[in-house]
Length: 149
Image (cartoon, rainbow, N blue to C red; front, side, top):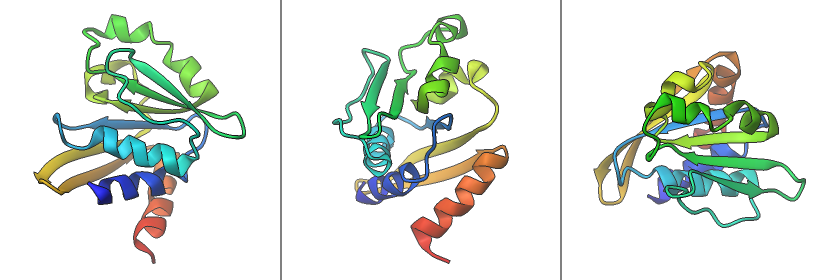
C-alpha cells in the first residue's frame, strides 16, 4: 500500500494540465490510495477523499491549477458519462478517473491506463499502459523517477 502511494507521488509530480489518467481494478485494489499519493506529488493543498457519491472532487495547488478526481463507479451509462463535460475537466486541469473502464467509450483515446490488482494485504500489482506519444514519454520519465536509470 505504501508502495502504491509512493508510485502515485512520483507520477503526480509529472502530471500536466490536460493529462488523463485512467484507473481500473477491483474494490480494494488501491485506486484511492494511488490517487492520494498522486495528488501529493502533484502538489495538492487539499485532502483526498473518494468521490464515489459526489462523482468529481477537485483539488487545488498553490499556483491555482486543478486536479479533477472522478469516480465512475456509480455512472450507469455512457449518456450519463457524457453529461460530465470531460472536455472542460481536461481543459482546466489534470483528470484522474477511478473505474475508468465503466466510461471508456467517452474518454479520449490518448491516456495513461493504470490497472491495479490486489496481491496481498500490503502488496498491489500496478500495470501502466500508455496510449499516445505524450503518455509514452511520460511513462519513460516516470520509470526513471520511480526506479532510476
